[in-house]
Length: 344
Image (tube, rainbow, N blue to C red; front, side, top):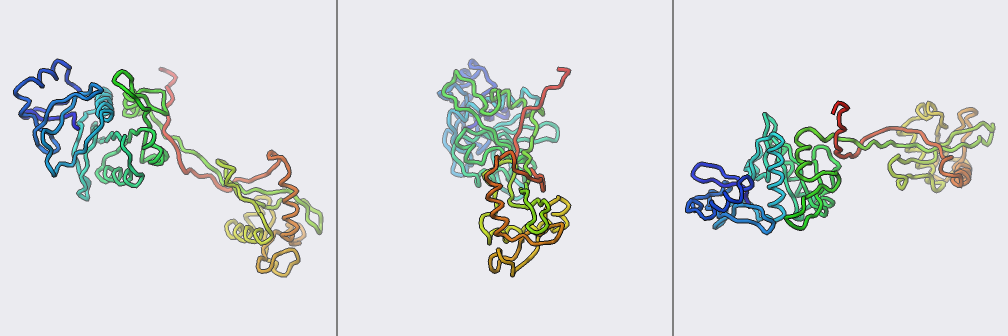
């Protein structure tokens, strides 16, 4: 349901009109000349149960692509529109556009400033992550940046805000016209958050994760030199995903994958044992020949021997476990409030 209508060439925004102006428009004969930009059909003047002033279809045409909106949606749209305008942007509600492919869209709140174009979407009704991605891509294909304001259940189902180019923000539930809608993850009202968003007050912070290679200390059965033997992989974010050697055949599989990825020169440069294939060695499972080798004397350490030592190592306290960072990467992140400058 729109906040915008046309009256004899003049654009009216319901949320900008005072209650007195709204009442005057409602009672005047000119309200019969009001039309909606979505379909050029006649508009009527209404007020929602939450006190939001809006326009509605007198009779909706079959080809109109606008959708019904809840009273909460209407109120949030009015709040977001007013906040965007106070942040210095030119704002149009229910703005109709289309992508280069010809896909049509209607932005709840369309903001422009110079060459910048931003669509602020309010999503309170259920929608799948796939549907949201399709809608977001329409904006991207149209050269428009988009940000989504969602209630909790929709936010969770959308995959939450973990992609920098697909910003999604959660709004706390509000019940009536006396409560001020608040953001869920920021100590700000919706209005203040919109101003912060449109004035560069958010920064993207990536979650850094590291791939770890775990190793244990052992001794070569032949020359007794201390060895650093690889025994598992994991990451810094979640120890539940750590994966250690489990069986004698599994040892061979782990070592064959590891030497293929890093190579023996790489393992030695990290201070770890080399890996080789020893198919006829007692203590290795048939058809699972890969095991570690002593860097000092070259003696292969059977997987049975390694696994026995691993079981002893696994009984140690967590802080005694040793690891090496193989790589660092970013897989997700979040928007945070930019720190205030010291001169403020």
